[in-house]
Image 1: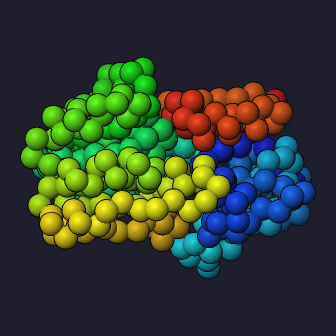
Image 2: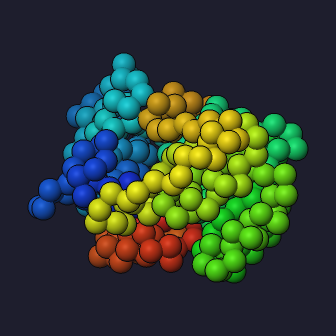
Length: 310
């Protein structure tokens, strides 16, 4: 089928792919930049897809792509990274772009990471980095729905206000404040029971000493490392031993079969006003490089989307 893209998702993993470090593969000079896209079928030679169908695929940084249907036999990482197109049914009143954000891979990352890995209990303290972003903002809301206290870490006073006033977190720390570690300690007087880390680097080093006894850390992303030309050193492992903590690596592709459940639940929560989100939308493919640079520099808020002209 021939697909005309309507939206392109920009995600931090792309920086790692450019450096040749990402599990999805490297991007060589001259290659089409990878990326998940949502669009409509313009022409089809497949009996199950018709002109006008809404599909999601890894069409990349381009306006058009040619795709085969996704193989329904694929599972996990193979399914997530397949170039095949999947037909979507978009509910009335829901923007299709949400299937690249809160109802797509970022939302699933938050949902599966919180529910299936960190599993915060009622009354526990849950902390998430990049809390104003597509993953972090959703993760904190899922944790609160499970009864935990959600504390965010973000990069400006404006982002912290968004995290508290819009996403409903119990508190937020501005990591650009020189005293952010002390502020985090004050917000987590009994320690951090569950830490959802998407940044690594200095932020991970700052949170580790605040772990509660039996604390859990989930490593989901390494944005600080994606931005570095070299592999960065890790934090001290002493708090893991002292707090009898657990550190788990998380890859959303391992939870891909949970996507239909999350989309049903997330759509319901949005309709009920229980799940809030934001999008940073850039018009046109020409704006994608700058939008991606802003994303990696922490200048965007929410899910980073490129919208193509209709």
